[in-house]
Length: 242
Image (tube, rainbow, N blue to C red; front, top):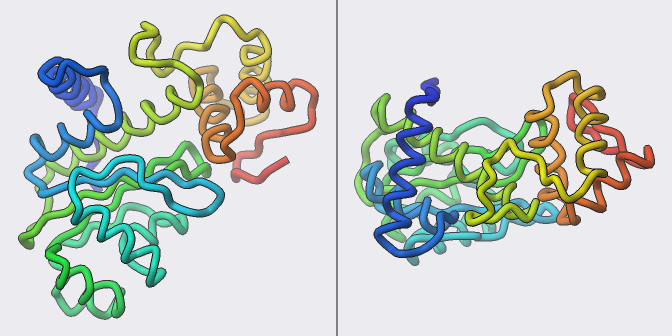
């Protein structure tokens, strides 16, 4: 399985910033999805988030993406469903191949009929906390080469950071990056330190876990931090709840 490198992450960040400047808009998940279509040679992109166990479309670049997501939710199977359920990346270069037909017998023919030929579903997660899925698709069959796959994983990582920044109230104009703690809330600092001790990770990773949990549970970051500080909530390495 290919992985993104720091240099690819920086490059993909630059691509998104360039697209944002071109559109005269802030960097956002929408800008990211449009950039992914332009740079990865895919037909479309859908970003879904997991809210109360139900996937919600945060961004879809066209109606086919919306249709593919709706189909998977409706029939309860498909590459994104596998990822939503806790699986790793699902990379399907040819939906109409026998392996795809056998794995998702209801979804696959419907997806092909809708116009999709290949799907690539990438998880957005921090440890065991599932935040969402980035789904790439093409109307022609074909795999992602090593470079495109590495860039796709970088897009997924940046999508995760944008979603968590949004939940934490760190907008694109705040001047903060994904590892900066919001200085106005001392409880968030204290909670981050406690999560770091509970998980035996660094402060940046602990803050990512805290933000991911707040996003997954759709609660304000400050409220979750207060619960951690009051010892009503505790983080576990396996992602279990309090």
